[in-house]
Image 1 (cartoon, one colour):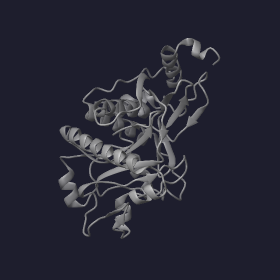
Image 2 (cartoon, rainbow, N blue to C red):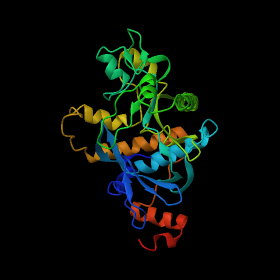
Image 3 (cartoon, rainbow, N blue to C red):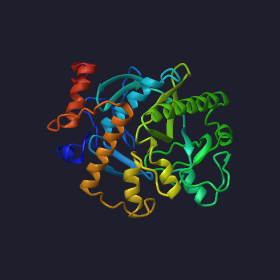
Length: 332
């Protein structure tokens, strides 16, 4: 079990930017830095940046490695449901995938009345809304209560710094964001992925409360799962053992996911309007430990700590050179 004391050497060993000399121009996402190769492959480097409330918050040591390896675990266990973009993993922070035309909708699947952001169903439910995302929720639900069935609450895919906007199946089809066939395929795949995730999480004593998926189409028009799956950034995980007691008491479920940092920030400011306060080093290290514990609980594998003396960007470039060939970087 990794604790904060063992992570002190990594406090200054963060991957905040993954600009790799010798690669094509970089596209910088909220968390991932992406490079499109001429042959149709895309290099996705998961940094240690953490983003919430449509804003960057901090950099958490080793977070990028946790996300990449957790997603790998889930990609390998869901490939029978829907094809995914993965080609190779040349580095603990890197996945090489097929370049896709990403569909302009984030597919969020929710099994519980939960959330902290403006688009979450709990936030909207507390405002008195009952009809949302094409669904109507009943009166009298408790915060964090299980829904009768899992529902899809899609949103627009905002650019970095933009705001996701709620959608519904009707709006998606009316706006031509997907064809009816694409929507059927994506929604069926998302619900099947979520069911698989909940079942495997339950075996680990966890509740997968909600998650988001990103889909694209390949050169043949097939729907392909992209980005990440069931990571602590894209998903909300709770501990099943303490859930009933906390639900009855009206307290937040015990969790490990991005909510650890989100909740710290939200308790100190209005994260949509106010400046984000500096997150103390001890909170950053505890967040790193939370991410690692999530990986180890989900996968049942020990997290492999990298050499803290090696600069992450240098290690990534070395591993990419081994994967692509030194000649690829000859101009770098």
